[in-house]
Image 1 (cartoon, rainbow, N blue to C red):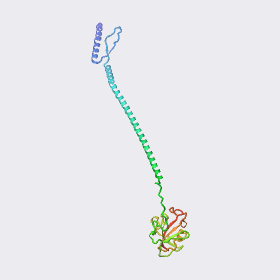
Image 2 (image 1 turned 180 degrees about the horizontal axis):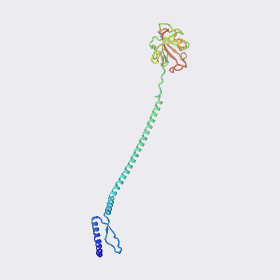
Image 3 (image 1 turned 180 degrees about the vertical axis):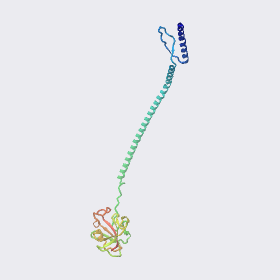
Image 4 (image 1 turned 90 degrees about the vertical axis):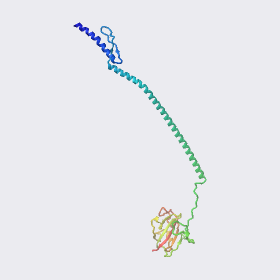
Length: 283
């Protein structure tokens, strides 16, 4: 019985392993072989042992992956390189366009500056020529002679309408007066209280005060006593002798008016003044 067991073991050994090897070899697509181990007796076994199916599949996948990568990468590298070259070329074109635009701007600026300087020079020369020829010299106008018989704006009676011209009376201290209309009422006397309407001018025709013009805001007759404590010296001398309803014009030198201390800025210092006085009443 021992011999039978001994004969059976080699048979199972020799028959089972080649059958499994053949089966595995048929199921795998690419069998890989490894060298066999040598026995203790020194004899070499010539049979090959196949790798496990999982290992062959992994190796196949790695081979397929490497093959796919080998096909993809070489195709992708030239595309990226071409894009980089195209970007560099476009960047160089942009730089060239910017430089050209900057050069155009500089040329335009220089041209504009030259034209502007030329125009300024031409205008300066033209102005110098015109000034030399007297084009900018103000025309010399002689002032219109002003006298006690001149017409002034807003006057009560127009002197030019009086025919013949009224007689001018001049006093020793320079007062001049003329009766534009002789009244028919009572006669005013010195130191007497009177009520009058009046309008005052500078000799250039500027109205500085009036009881008849609304803009001066005292549109009513003025009442005062004919003394130097109430009115200027020219009125103290010029009003007495008038009759109620009469109109007299007074031409007052500065000494008989406000002198160096006028009551308002509209009257210059030491100005000659002209007054039209209408005697309204003698209270």
